[in-house]
Image 1 (tube, rainbow, N blue to C red):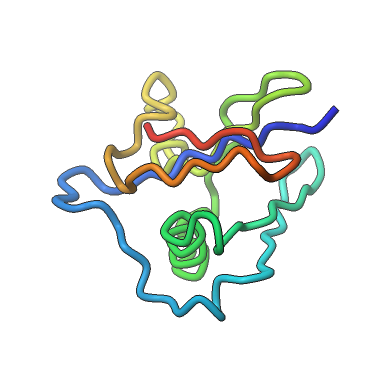
Image 2: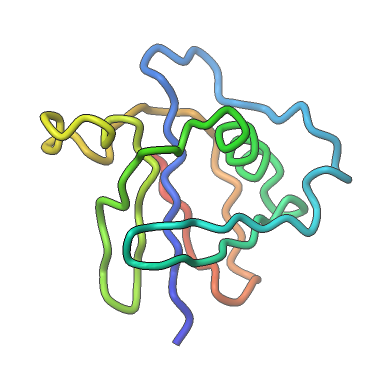
Length: 122
């Protein structure tokens, strides 16, 4: 059964316009991200041809170190993995995990690729 990777792309509060990637198509194709956790690692395939702004935002945030020290804060067995919220760096904000920003991206949902079923915008 394929695992649905639910990636929440979060922006800092006050973002006026949704992110639009400045990266050229060649820099967005055939990209993967290795996510390392205390429970093991997994690989995410970035679909730059199907969702260029999402792939570009993920690459930008990763290059800037934005995911370093964040938690995987939601896991549904055989279903969903959610993490990367900048608020998860602060344990005192655990009630807010998953709400670390709003409207960073416009929807680019594509259901034609096996293993990827959803993106969440929180």
